[in-house]
Image 1: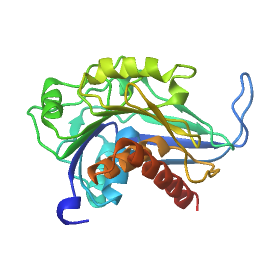
Image 2 (image 1 turned 180 degrees about the horizontal axis):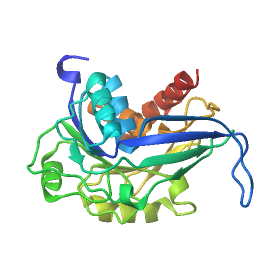
Image 3 (image 1 turned 90 degrees about the horizontal axis):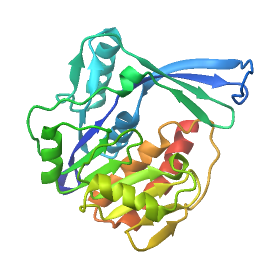
Image 4 (image 1 turned 180 degrees about the vertical axis):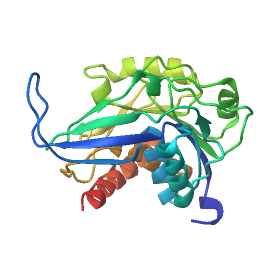
Length: 273
């Protein structure tokens, strides 16, 4: 992508080393579960969203952390080779913590993350400019908040663990993370986090209808078709990347959600193949 459609986007989020265990049956209390294969690959909310935006042709900078061991070095080299701007990635002393993901035959996943990895903060010593920012982090330093305040577009993932206030135009969440909570109540929580700048709350529900809420009206967005795949890891983050792409292309929140949902379906199919 070149010209006016190519945007400079900063993605703030974790880059994980995911160790994926493919189980032969669902997890159950007290059970002995066999696994058929195990693989390690880059993942995390920041990585998957940034990867989607990069694949869609944007200039993407990752604001994240990597450890200074061999795993961190390999990850940094892989990100540079893919075409990411890695100048905002901080290097930290210590060993890389892997995220273990148990993936059962139905595609259901269980993620195990260390408290130390989840508590990592992001480092930025000065305010920066971009056409848009995507935030998938609970806590943000002042330089990042200043950057967000000045940005034309900010999309934030709904933080699940002690999220701090961050200015955002759109907040994206999953109904699975807030089961049974009316969308009006989720809006109140989102508005408290995203400030009065928030215009829309977008709640996904797997292959079911997406809810887009503006504080008054809830619009249901149904996907054009559903697919069944064995691996849904990164689907929600990929949706967020596609959503940002559509918003930057001039679509409204409802139109962007429809496009993002359908494109994520196609992305899942392509990866499954």
